[in-house]
Image (cartoon, rainbow, N blue to C red):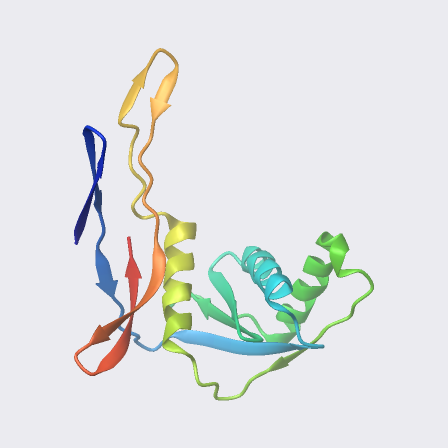
Length: 165
């Protein structure tokens, strides 16, 4: 898909591609914290929890945390998640004296959008589309950056998960 915007005499072209996702035996874990977290806390905690395990990404959606481990890596145990949560709470002074209890959700219904969010996080962390500098002169370096967004696309009669660049 290509979009063109006319700005005065200049015309800019933005390219965007949509990549449909197919889920194949994903190593997923879903857990909740008690007391419940609000959106701001959930996003902050998911970001920090993702940094605790090198081959795991975590996203927060509607009160649940969803973790995805790399296919060749084991999913951390609940005990390891509890230790990671304690470490994160020590890093974040705004959590105050709050103590969270972590409980795993057995057989969760994983929303399609969450799979897209996990894919987006993987692409942001691994940066498979890192581009070299385009121009470098007089101490000025021009770099191109690829940005990704989680998407849901209508595929005939159903919504499918996708990532847009």
